Amino acid sequence: MRSSVLVRLVLTTSVVATSAVQASTMYLDNGNGNVCNPVLSSMDKVTRVFNGVYNASTSTSAEVFCAVNTTMQGSSFIANVFSRNPSVSMTCTLYQKNDKTGATIWSSTKSIAGVANSGVKKFSWDTYGHDSKNMVVDCMIPPMSASGESSRIIWFGREGVVP
Image (cartoon, rainbow, N blue to C red):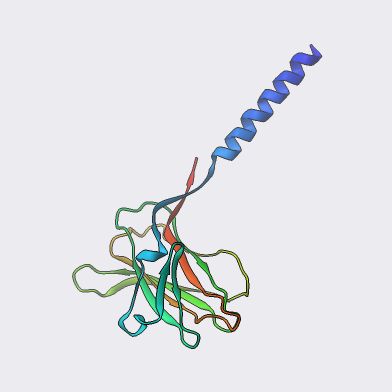
């Protein structure tokens, strides 16, 4: 009887633990930062590497825009970045444009302070109630830090929870 209770407890615990692990964050319709494009005034500053787009300038910020896949679903939109210049913050704005007039329907701007040697940081926008049609992310990437570290956009896309 005692071993039977122990076996049930172990099996129940493993089922609960497995269920908890399965409910996880999922990134949908992602885009590598390499698909982001510089605005005309930043063409000579922006460089692409395997893990995103970065600003190679040591003195001025660079502006890039990233077109958002219009078929995305999910409750939030994220951009994963390295923001490594402690003197200049990285700023990104998520826009939704009217497809006929080009007018902005809504927008939201986020900013992350730079930290030397930092890992990935995440911009996150709550987009519940907004479709993904005609969305664009526009980011100002800080110049390289005094120690030569680059800030970059690594990945962007929808984020949802998988049950």
